[in-house]
Length: 131
Image 1 (cartoon, rainbow, N blue to C red):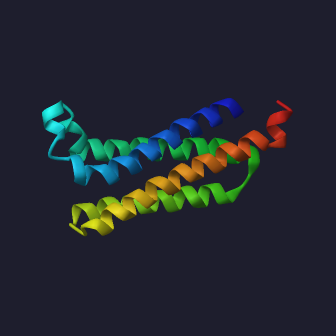
Image 2 (image 1 turned 135 degrees about the horizontal axis):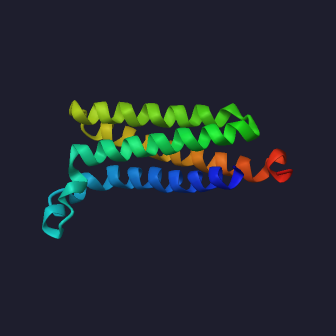
Image 3 (image 1 turned 90 degrees about the vertical axis):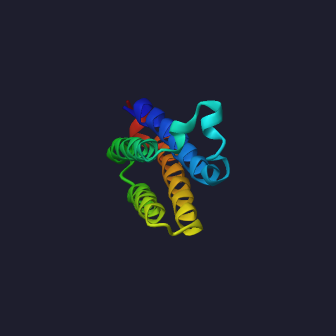
């Protein structure tokens, strides 16, 4: 179970960081994407898919990690990250401009940090070492 939680955290960290990079880069590269065959990256459905995948990975890995290390800080960080991501999507859809992008990036980075912290706790967990 420990290995699965750590792997989910690594995948979740990567997914969250990719989401944050995606949010930062989109305003700069959106006009060029169709020319290189990556126009789908700028669609609403792709962005919602990234958000949902990141959410599922985050919730799954934090739940498994919590069963082992019982640290509520990780779930609070994940909840903050998810709230920022969903608020950022709302802001983006309602034309808040740069504020929406900043909120999305902060949400992605907060989620990535929650995965990192969960991974660190799972690696140092005394319960894991007795398995």
